[in-house]
Image (cartoon, rainbow, N blue to C red):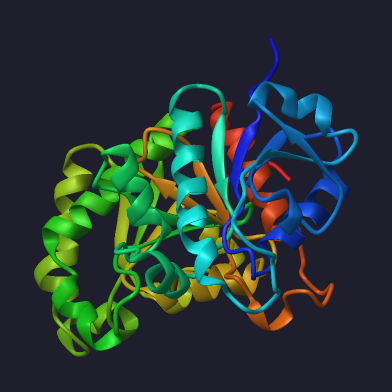
Length: 325
């Protein structure tokens, strides 16, 4: 049976998305079927217009397969065009519809610029993830960053560090852990080993450096362990991410954005992948932004885009996320 291709939403045309898509096709060839929803004029390489995802595998031998949509104007690298914004949003919406209809096996999203979408089309969502959750009718989702050596989930994301303690509630942390546990089980982990980071230095050091660990995190971990989850913590974040420590768990739940993203970007800066857990379909994304500053210069690195495609393929096939090269 032919494997359904991966749907790729083109993202912000003025960023590096159209370039990493083309460079990804050059490296992958026919090895990993995908197609792009976007304006063929914006892709920085040979394209083959297609009318249905089933044509993608055949088209890959000649160029990037593109479900052609007119975005209403040319691509200017580094300069977002207001006219493009509604089409960028529509491409995401169409990609989700195709995946949910079974015409594509998974979704990989190229980066968007939230300000450009807000200014050009009144986009009201904080980001890609929230919009995808809205389209899928699944409000409870979490962000996982993954590479072959590490998987991390931030319990709080794009908020100031000063707001983290108040945002870090028992209910919210419990929901994040349960969604992560369920998603990894669906990917082949019989009982995922979960490591929970502390919020404070040295995981609070017995209350000397903060009491969140004593009053909330440790009791929550004990309750989940009593349910049978393979869970440990709260652990000092400064000793969780060296190689021997990583061997002891399958995923680390971190308390704030940089606590999660610093280690994975240090270990595999170019190859990290953003995965949304809790959606009714597989969604991955390169772990980088639009990079307006290098758009059009030929310096865009497709490594993370290729890793995102590979991880989407493996997750759609039921393999462990981050387990393949």
